[in-house]
Image (cartoon, rainbow, N blue to C red; front, side, top):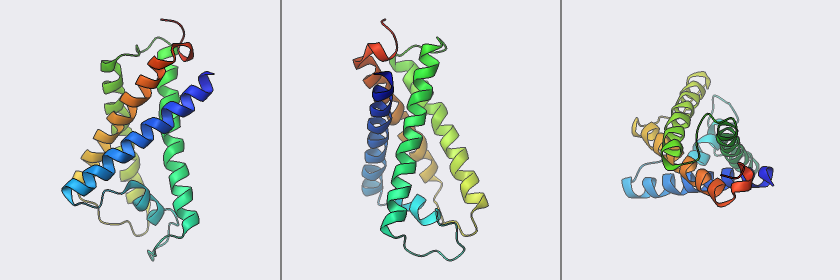
Length: 151
């Protein structure tokens, strides 16, 4: 049951983060489309060409898989008693994984042979998006207390 809850928490959190980034992109009229950027970079080629559907699918699966990993780590920290499953912990965890995500993206841009140009505000949006991911994942864990032990 905990595994299913963790997968659900990761998928729902990633979906909330993705919706946040899409809405932010529309409001600010900026190209903050994480999966599109990831799909463009995944072939790891110097010549950037529009990704095919299988690359988009792979980028989407990778994006959501990482969200599930972040949810699992949140659950693990909770089970180990290192954090409690409350709003403050979710906000702090989201801020922390947001920093991890920014470092990951920056490394990916650094090693890619032809990374796309990214505005600095992209990283702020990534950071805020991970707070959304964490808050939604924590809420799902609160809805199913058996996944983190009875409170």
